[in-house]
Picture 1 (cartoon, rainbow, N blue to C red):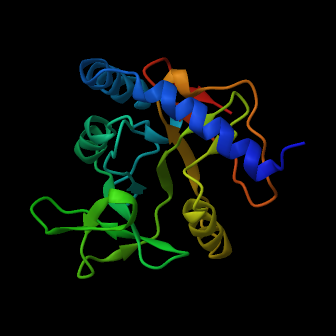
Picture 2 (picture 1 turned 120 degrees about the vertical axis):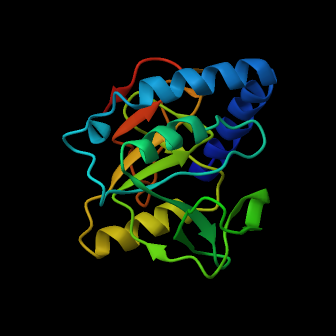
Length: 196
């Protein structure tokens, strides 16, 4: 019988292989649709999204959905954007993203603001993922960086909203969850927004 981490790893591998089959044109079109549907999230209504709201986005790697169209709309609505940056083998921090500011390479092929950028505590996280289910279960890439960062935010009494971003083909029937895993509050794909 497989261990829980092995089961998650096998699911991740299968679903990422499926995601990798999407062509570039499809990924672009689906990312644009996701931006439209992402704005349906209640956290982004003009009543809720204040200029002081800090939203963590991400810059896509490999065959990930591209959140930049949604991030651009959120900026237009007044959100303050930050990006996650891996700072050690076990942690990441969220750094202010400012147009024209220098970007540097980080772990896993990601890029983001350099160490001179302000470190922020986001209230909303747009989270990349490899797998999700219809309960809000999520599998990332296996490093646990987001789980630890979310725990730090919760320990500061920050009510953080976790919104996964991916393609609908990354959904599975059930994600096996471990004690430390955080459930998503919603999922943004190229299909209408869903809350959990």
